[in-house]
Figure (cartoon, one colour):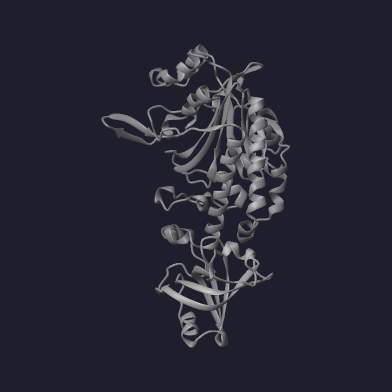
Amino acid sequence: MTKLISIADCSKHVDEEVQMHVWLTDKRSSGKIVFLQLRDGTAFFQGVIRKNDVSDEVFEAAKSLHQEASFYITGTVHQDERSHFGYEIQISDLKVITNSEGYPIGNKEHGIDFLLDHRHLWLRSRRPFAIMRIRNMIFKATVDFFENEGFVKFDAPIFMHSAPEGTTELFHTEYFGGDAYLSQSGQLYGEVGAEAFGKIFTFGPTFRAEASKTRRHLTEFWMMEPEMAWMHQDESLDIQERFLSYVVKQVLDNCQYELSLLGRDPKKLEPAAEGNYTRLSYDDAVKMLQEDGRDFKWGDDFGAPDEAFISEKFDRPFFIVNYPTSIKPFYMKKNPENPKEYLCADVLAPEGYGEIMGGSERESDYDTLREQIKEAGLNEDNYSWYLDLRKYGSVPHSGFGMGFERVIAWICKLDHVREAIPFPRMINRVEP
């Protein structure tokens, strides 16, 4: 019996007759030969039908196929070094399942707005296919890394009643007669988990209501946020470096085909997989901007152009450490050597992509945190449970968050972050 395989498994079945179920992405014919560009969700490759090798019915069926037709094929796999994938199939039989005309996304250039309006179909194309496959590998690498490090997966709620960061960035909703907000971050709840299990990571959707028309900001995106009890900031930076270099290495080891579909040079990612990330102080970063003639003073927050300028100086991710307290959230621990700074850090990606991760040592003292909540203008009653973590069994602890779509945009070298959005929700649309 002919074995049913996926395109991705072709290397294991060279010169064997196999069966596949596929969709058509493109077609051309040359007299007595029809060339079919095929996909099955695992990869793209070419199928060839020669008139002399099949029945007239099969040959005519192949010639009449339209884009995104679905069908079964039977044939023999051969190596083909001319293609990205490296294999093709000589088709001996074909059975059509559906063959509709008028597929709206043709094999030509389309504007981004048109493609987003047809996002539910655009995902079938090579570029979003490659991005989503790499996204899946980053997800797998993330889970593998933290499980190997002894972390527990800890789920934070989607609805929350208090803000980890700016209250103006929350989506408000009524929740059975009370006020609730879509999660801005799972971090505060992650700290609950850390004091119960030692080391945890949350991983889920988060929402920001800030009005933004930049390539870097989305109203809905995914965050990965570890929290670690009994850990100071320097130890957290070590884990962040090991984690990010592991993720990049997994992409390089397992996604060469997808990177080639995107035209992404893997050599640009190799330094990131090696580790050895620079730890640049906020003070030194400010000097770099000032020496370039930029109107930037100590205490200012970095904008995307500032981050892009600094990151162009590095061939791999790097840390900017110890930001002013005035531009970071209330829950961070102040630097004992300079109380105007927090013990915190952002990770910036090279090639102008800017911040992809951020974290800090958390303030572990009850009275100090209570005062910082007041200074931030927040309602202490909303954080009574969070203060309890400092009242009962408090320990030094640290954590960080990774913006999943930002990391994907950098690894895939995307011009705008929208290509990394997993679902066709129009709420995610921002200008490039």
